[in-house]
Length: 117
Image (spheres, rainbow, N blue to C red):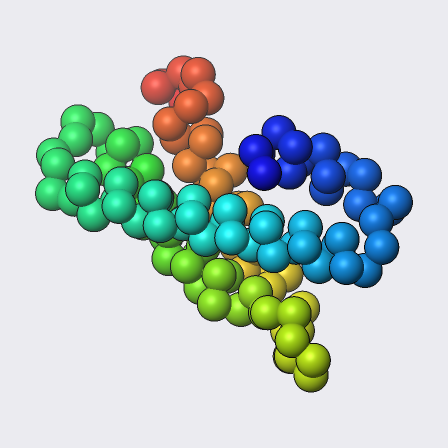
């Protein structure tokens, strides 16, 4: 399943039966874990590189935090076995921290911000 079709399936999840939702969840979780592995490889491969300026130095710390949070989130995403524990509060808390770290990372790296601010 491609990312584009995965996103389309998520947008139309209201029309899916429980088996299709389970398959979509498992495919999404698999894609998330693969993205986490890629990010971890990037993080390990870019360690020790000297950067100019505080923004990039702090962004590298944030990227590491994003990788750690994503890996933690991956551990709390349950399988779909009977009597599996779904800890929604932990997943929600880690997801919020991950989102906030990403917003800071985007602001530091991607956004065109006046350096005098």
